[in-house]
Length: 228
Image 1 (cartoon, rainbow, N blue to C red):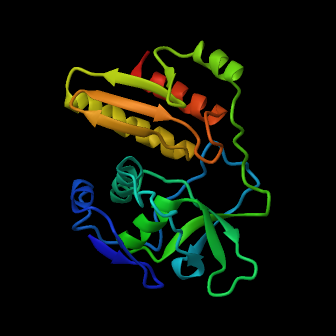
Image 2 (image 1 turned 180 degrees about the vertical axis):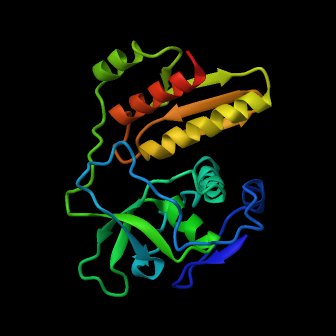
């Protein structure tokens, strides 16, 4: 499916992703998606709705895939169910502002999914310079200590890694939906894949360049969802 940002930049979401999320007959009935405060957000950070016209379209560096299926699909699915609240997009003020007032700091997929769905606004938190929540990379010793508190997880290629196996595809997919809701509440999303009854999950924090406390927190929630 092909779309344009308010400023006329072309982008495309694969047809099979759009169809899987049942977005072909989706129609907006409000200005923005349903949003809520993630557990990791400080209480003092205010959320407000901002017109998409005021936000500079975020761009990927050359050679990096524009969208990831594991991140785009949960967002589109949440649009279909207003009870599934997504976190607001983190933005920074542009100084000088010029055409746009804001620049996306965290929320690439939520920005483009919102444009594609037909929303006119985004729920945002405006961060001051240096106001982003810091996610420090853990040392090898801290990672080793964290792994001792988890069952079945290891470090593979710099990520917390685990493969979950289920009786059938339906159980595997149900597990993924529950994990997606937990990840959205934390505003921290896994890299994962599904092959019939197996779900492979890798966790790391790209902005920190490695594994952080957020990754261990999400791994713990995933372990509880799985039941062991």
